[in-house]
Length: 264
Image (cartoon, rainbow, N blue to C red):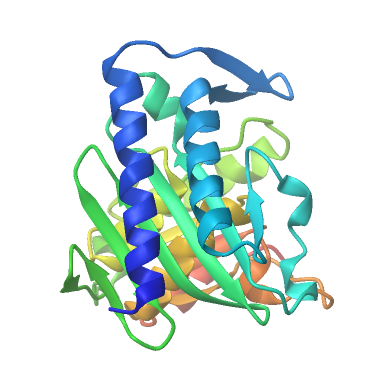
């Protein structure tokens, strides 16, 4: 394990301990970004902790965070070292006492995401990957499932706070239900993707923000997943950073799932 991975795991675990403690103490306060997206004081506290640890260790690095610096999203335009952070992915789950929430931290250098850690402190599951080195769950190698028959697959997705394009979303769900075994909706995109990496799910699709998927996408790819999009990608954006219409599945399933939900 590299020193950078050790550092990232330690920070994720510390932030995870903080959010568990805050919920156990029943001291959560709530607010809504843009009137629809829930944020708690624990999101802010975990963000500040992660930011402080990175700034202490790597003062020259940039930090892209959902809670404190969302304006830095065009990281593919920079050769700087950038940390991409979601202090609590699955805040609605977290605020309602569910266990499917995670700390997500990715490291990007020279416009390439090279390290990802997703930690669920409620289950003590640490998903990790470094570029070219495979993916692990609590230190054990993980690989995607190999199911290629649509009728036997479990597909995960999510739904946005702003319900634009709801008819198209419903149509895609209809296609999945008619052709696949079932749908799952964990409420944490990072964990959806990591569960796919660990073989617990067969496919995943959704439109997200970069901090939701940066770490998990690398983990899934290193576990053998094919990562792409079910809609067009703008020519001026590196596909690994494009947040709309993500599609991730094992390579045998990917083209079949793409055909079901593709945007022309």
